[in-house]
Each structure stands twice: as structure tokens, then as C-alpha cells.
Amino acid sequence: MILRAERLNKWYGRVIALNDVSLGIEAGITGILGPNGAGKTSLMRIAIGLMRSSSGRIEVLGQDPWNNPALAVRLGYCPEHDGFYEWMTGRDFVTSLARIRGVRDPRAAAEAALERVRLREVADRRVLTYSRGMRQRLKIAQALAHGPELLVLDEPLTGCDPLVRAELIALIKAFPAEGKSVLVSSHVLHEIEQLTPRIVLIHKGRLVAEGDVHEIRDLIDDHPHTVRVATDRPRELAAALAREEGVVEIRFENGSVWVRTDAPDRFYRRLPLLALAERCVLREISSEDDNLEAVFRYLTER
Image 1 (cartoon, rainbow, N blue to C red):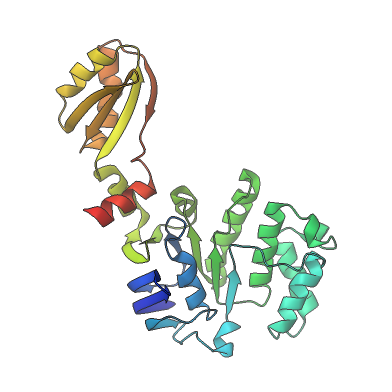
Image 2 (image 1 turned 90 degrees about the vertical axis):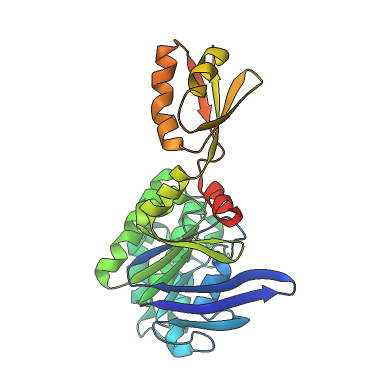
């Protein structure tokens, strides 16, 4: 097990960042999911020894990370927010951090890391000239240059264009084959789905759920949905929907039909068939409940 936490708490004055979190994470890639402000970054900073917990216990690679330089060099951290020396070149930045971490040949280590993230061609440019995607890749390069056993990546895909995102996902997925484990955070479910089936859900500092991503998908599908359907024949469609199993409420608003259902899977399967039977044109279907934030709300309020 690469990480074990028991009743972990962190607070800043009256603000609670982590609330009685207990979990165990095995080797491989694990996604830490939660909306902004959920406590993901606090958990990661405690895990790498950058911050001390207020109470509780945590072990990373079998050791307490706080004030533990020997463990720190076994970890690689990619923070969410930039912390570059903008006047340095990418090569000098990665080389300097490799030297600080005690790498015997920091220049060679930096070259290998920059090659790995496809930045060698721009390595002699100053960081201030880098795009958002290049900066994200540079942060990952410095995190892996010293050959860590565990990579901790805080929102590494934020702000990246689709091409860079695909490249970073492929890079991260390759780490376990090299004997590395990865903790990667995101507030976007589909990003984590592309990386790993194993996820931890955190909301308002609390551990909400952990397990296989398909179980989380089931939670999205199982919790009640309110769906807006824009159609040219709202009353005819509403009459047909009222006879359907699982539909608990129907109302009209701004020319659309609003349907509340406690069987969303069945509803989405049946809706096109009913529209066809009633000769209704479906112009738009939307639901604010068909996302991860809605699952958090459902799990914490039920």
C-alpha cells in the first residue's frame, strides 16, 4: 500500500480542509476527484510532507511524510499552480531542481525528463515564453527527473488543449509499467476515467466514496435526475411521460418540459421512443444532475 490515512484532519482556523479522512491506496494509478475546494490539494500536500496534518495519521510508502527528507526524494510533486522562476530556461529549471534533490548527474536527468515530456526543442527558451500546456509538461518533467517511486500530480491537465491532454494522459498511464505509482487529482470525471478505474471522491473535506469508477458512474445513473426537454409538442410528450415508470414530477417552464425521475437510465432509454411515437421533435435534452457535482450533493445530503 502506497498511502494509508487514519482519521486525518486539517483545518485552517475555522476552515476545515480535511475532515476525519481514512483511506488506503494501493500501488498503480489512483484518481482523487472532487470539486474545487474539496480538500484534494490539502491531502496531497500532507502526503508529500509539504504540510502537516492537524490530527490523525498518514503513511506514504510506509513512512510519515512530515519532516522526512529521505522520503521526500522518493516522491515527485506536480503542483496545480505554477511556481517557476520565469527568467530561467526550462532546462535550467529542471536541472536545478534535480540538483537540489541530490541527483548525481542532474544535467543528464533533466535532459531525459525533458525528452520524456517532449520539451527538448524548447528547453533553452525562458519559462515566461511557455504556453499553458508547455508549463504543465515542465512541471511534470521536474517531478519525474529524480526518478521518484510515487508521483503526486495535482490537476495536471488543467488548461491543456486536447492534443496536450492526450499526450499527458498517455505519459501518466505509462508510469506503472516502470514501477511508479501515481496519485492524480481532478475535478473532471472523464479525465480520471481515461487514466484509471480506481478513484477516491472527496467533498467538503470528507471522503465520500472510493472504489471503481464504474461504481461512481452507477451513482450518477442511480440518483434522481431533473431533466429539461425542449420539444415542439411539450404537452403531448408530457402526457406520454406521465405514464412512464420512474417519472415522479412533470412541469412546464419557458416552453420546455421539466421531468424529475428516480430511474434516469430507463428515462433516457425511453425518451426517444416516446418522442417518435408522439411525433415530437426533441430540440434539446439537458440535466444539471448528470455530473459529478450532483453525485457529491446526492451522497452528502441523503
